[in-house]
Image (cartoon, rainbow over all chains, first blue to last red; front, top):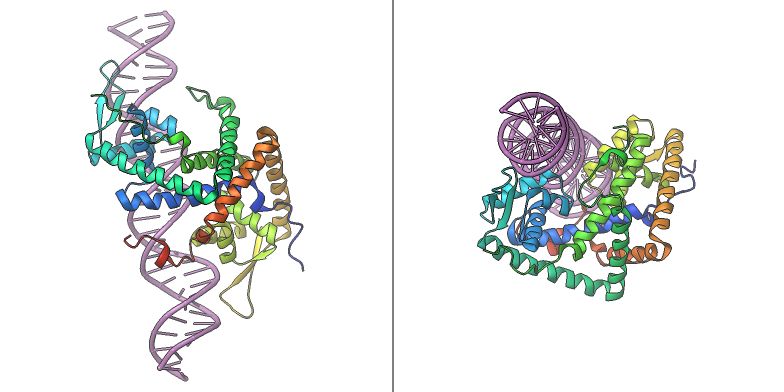
Length: 166
Length: 166
DNA sequence: AATGGATTGTTACATTTGCAACCAATATAC
DNA sequence: GTATATTGGTTGCAAATGTAACAATCCATT
């Protein structure tokens, strides 16, 4: 009994698999840095970083921008609010939407964490070497571009995109 | 109140973030293919693919190889066994270890799914263009090489590597 | 203004996941 | 040989996540 047929597929070479592994590794490692420093979870860090970058956004904006589901965003925002790192401000014209902004405290922490992030990235770039780092970036740019075609710029109409069953 | 300080960090350019987004997108898309076709979950697919490639492995092997937590592996293996896609065979020398192999049925399904995978990859390569695709691959290769210390999340001896306090 | 349809954000529930405790078997120390 | 540590694998429980339902608000058509 050989047990093994021809290994039709080499998992190590398979793009989705590699992407996942690389992403997990890098992301986990970075997460452990800011978690130690601030205790933030990943969704919370993302929300913070998005807000820090854009100044004022609604929860939906954050979700769309960072590709997080709205419940995740909702909870992350809640957590950041509990820390007094952000404040909500109901829109005066449309009382459904809340504009989110970092408080002074939030900004202070954002700056510290952003520094950690840049630091991390710099070290990563050094480790990989500029050339490979840039190739990686170019590749991912392409992936995003390729699949972004199907993500409508402002609205997602799943109708045609999603699998019909389930 | 302006609300926005200088956006110290551009999330879209930030490597961990991009990696995650790219991986999620690609992986989700591929998952929807084999899920529709077979109903496998992601851990199950990974276990199957690993076994299909290597013929006979223990649960620990699968875990180490695919960077999955051992409970995840355990459950995935259980599920595949329930489908009669794999069988366990207790080692005669060490009765703790179980050697896992695909049944004929499992192999048949593996082949079908491997074809889907190769198909997917081929289309991806076409979409990105060979050059970018290869650059992406080279980049990820480098990431893996750089962080290889992080291989088996289960086996890690944290002492020197991990953060000292929680 | 009134009904129906979107849209924003939250909450309830089910599923998935990871950590820790656990059993069984082996290896090591005494 | 007996005690202790280690290892392969499973299970219980708690935390994280996604789906679906929801309340509140706005918009469109009538």
